[in-house]
Structure formats: structure tokens, C-alpha cells
Image (tube, rainbow, N blue to C red):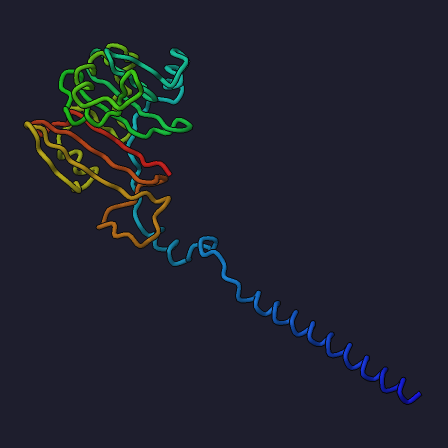
Length: 252
């Protein structure tokens, strides 16, 4: 009988010891989980960053009043990605508009959902060479066309452009070809870069977009591009008069 009591005592003591170890282990696991590293990208944006962004001036990027319906009509006409061909050169994902009285052309290079990635505006009889060079055109095999090939075939695209009213060639900010440089400087401020080639002066501006601005980059006193991922403007002048422009809107 005494032996049975002793055996029962040791079994009970062993069971309680094991249960205590399990409890301790579980506490350790729970404690370690409290210090689990979290993805910093999921953390909310600092209130200080939001306040800084709210105090910075915004700049409404310029555009033309050509509607999305007018652009969509060109896609319906050729049943493709706005494809046009001139000589050995193809234009894809671009819509071309012209006005015979003004002798001016507008080109909209499009991205997903009609986003206006790049807009080109120029006189038909006085096109800056660099402006043509910046337009992405392709060979019939799908390769990027060389600068020389683009220059050779460029005029053929102008004859295929859709004719529209002259009112569409004035920007939302009231700029038009022929405006003097001082008018543009009052609107854009001092440019980030100036270059002159063959009598044509090019002024460049680069604006950081407010969508991705983190409050750390030095804006050098310039406003943020409103509702934008980033905006660049390249304006061409001859004898102090605007003869062409390129407006570029970054994509996410």
C-alpha cells in the first residue's frame, strides 16, 4: 500500500512538471511574436510628410482641349492601335490632328486608358529637328526607326492627319504658337536648362509630381505637378517666338 502511494506521488509530480513546461514554452512563443518585424512599406505615411506636401504650391500641367472622343474616333477608323504608315515608317499609339489655316499639327502619344503620355505641337513648315527625333516611330519590321528615316518620312504623316478646328490648338493655359518667350517664362518660371542649336532655342522644365512626392527631394523652389507622377515641358523658340512644344507626363 505504501509503495502504491509513493508511485502515485511521483506520477502526479511528473505530470505537473510537464504541464508547466508546456505553459512556459507557449508564453515564450507568444512573447517572441510580439517582436515580429513588420513590412515598413505597410506603415502609414507620416503626418509631418502630409503637412509638408500640403504647404507646397501645385502646378496644373498644360494640355489641349482635344477630347477623348475625338481621339477615340481615329482608333475606330483604322481598327488598330492608331496605326499610320508613311514610306517605310509606321506610327503606333498616336493620334494626329492638323489645321490647314494655321498650318499646325498636334500629336498625342497615348498610354493605357487614354493617358496622354506625350503631346507634340508644331508648325508644319518649320518643325524643329529635335522634336521629330523625340517622336517614337517604327520600321515596317517593328524596330525603332532611325532619326534619318523619321525625317525622310515625317511629312507623309501630316497629310494623313485629321483636320480639326483652330480652337483646339490653344492650350488650357492660353498658349499658342507664335507667343513670345516672356509670356511663357511668366507661366513656367525660369527653365531648368537652355540650349541653342541652328538658331532654335530650347527651354526645358522638369516638375516633380505630387502623387509620388515624399517630402524629401529638393524642389528648388518649384511647385509640384498637380495630380501627376512627373511632368516635363520642352519649348522651342526662334527669334523669341514659340514654334514648337513637347509636353510629357510620366507614368507610374
